[in-house]
Length: 256
Image (cartoon, rainbow, N blue to C red; front, side, top):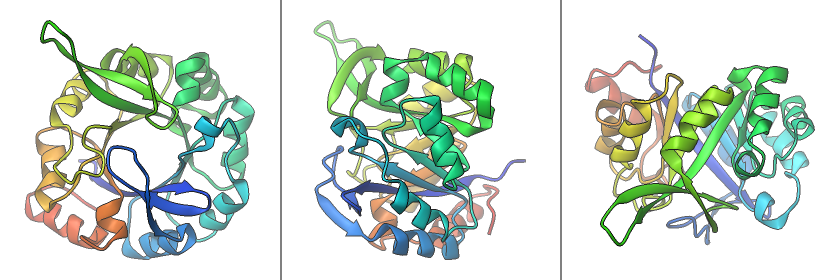
């Protein structure tokens, strides 16, 4: 049985890790290099590095900072933010990333997923989806894809986009719940279970972790393959080892 992964996330803006509620990103959470060093020592299974304002500001990712973080790590590193071309993907892989995470650019140019998978392999292409629940006047609920750091609605159904992304070659999905982000009220289990029931690639739960049971629920109810969290780790609410011990006591296989 594959082990369940626990993944801290560094949301970086202006050279600092930031956190907030529902993508507000208005609180300083520390130095990315120091945090990368900590999570590497703590036994995180992977680290995610997002330059969260790159797409909104229409620029590329801060490569110097990425390279400094990569030098601290002996665990897989997934990097996203402002990656708009296959050459951008190649650049972050050369800088030390093991995976590339694409979001806004993939929505604008879906063929980027196909091109990246053909050139680097599906295992290097992670489709990150920022989703927010939308309620229609007739009462119908659905999850809408947002881009540019959760600032812009697209009218695209997140579940359909997840399936298309996998069909195009994405080897992994990250489901970021805008509604749950930073609230510490739990992952969006409905969104998780809906997508995991439709695709055959690993799905990472993101947004909303606030208790140890939230991590367990993401696996046992949402059927996620990995859990991603930020503020509860950055501010010391829980450590990565604490989460893993809790998962193990509930019969979930983890790398201790």
